[in-house]
Amino acid sequence: MTSHHVEANRYAGRQWLYARRVIDTEVTVRRASDADAPALAGLRWRRAIQERGYQGDNLDEFVATLGDWMRGHPEHRAFVAEADGEVIGMAWLAVLDRVPTANKYARRGGDVQSVFVVPELRDRRVGALLMSAVLDEARRLKLEHVTVHSSTRAVPFYERNGWGHDPEWLSWASEA
Image (cartoon, rainbow, N blue to C red):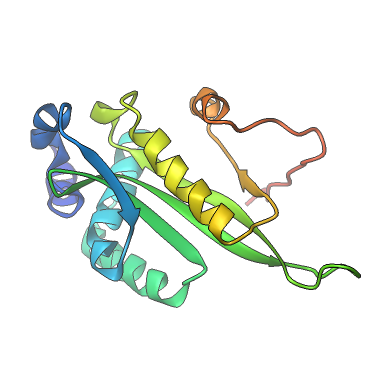
């Protein structure tokens, strides 16, 4: 295990050593608080290393930055999945105000972001529990619609959880 994995592990909840024991343990999903910032940063760090090849050594700075960012962006609601008190997954719902129409002055939509479940616990319905919590929040907030930009690998997950493709939704990506 590299030093980056050991350091990320410190923040993400020791999932590497812990995963085999949590497979049969109850998973709970709840709205994240500021106190969860280190665990959320650890999950984002782990994803950057394992899935995106990041090689940085700025984990402590990133933990502090994500905590500050969370406090400054309350419109981004984080949810965490826990097993035995350890954070094993996350999903974020960004709530966005929309331009009023002539007959509806208050309009909001949402965007699902940064969904991640530790790889050793995928395909055990943890992601589905996270998505249920996110969509329950969207319903509670009466969002008009919720979008998600998915990896190719995750498209079947979203389809199994009620998401559909819409030919009217288009995207643009910066070349930067």
